[in-house]
Length: 224
Image 1 (tube, rainbow, N blue to C red):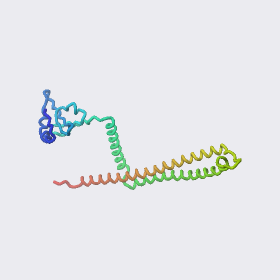
Image 2: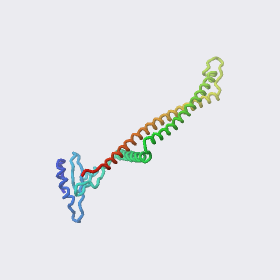
Image 3: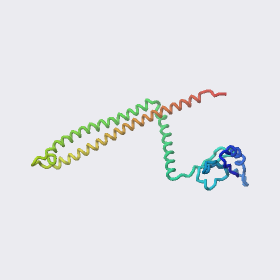
Image 4: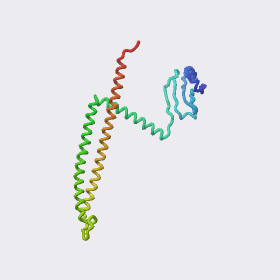
């Protein structure tokens, strides 16, 4: 079979495609027609793909020139990983859309769930802040006691700080740092919850609007 190699002759090639695709081999089987693009962007049709283009995207066409099959171009490991990630993200988005429309009957229900989550996080933050205030008071008291001993007390004859006081100071300061970090984490979590639910509400409205538009189109009388 001859190939139509001029891009501007695609229409002619498609017109001839029906006849060539229906051509049968000696054993009576219908030949397969392929479509591919060369290095210069020129579209080709043929009953086989040249070896130099075998790793590129190929389309299989029927006798009417309609695509009935496709072979994806071979990808590098990086391209394959990016493609797999894109597919996963698309699947996750579709699953989340399904979750939204099947779980919540209205925006108010989404807001109610958001508020419950925020109340929980805010409660944890409030409890941690109260504990931090208590720890801060404790640390300040320990600092005042430590001022009686060296190296904070520089007066001649000042005693060395007792080991138990030094250890208690270290533990209190460490716990204070830990709790401050925990509060920062909870505050970031609160911001994330707000952002996620804002996005969910926006997406839910889009899905409901889209569904309403499809329903309206379906109920509209068809023109004769």
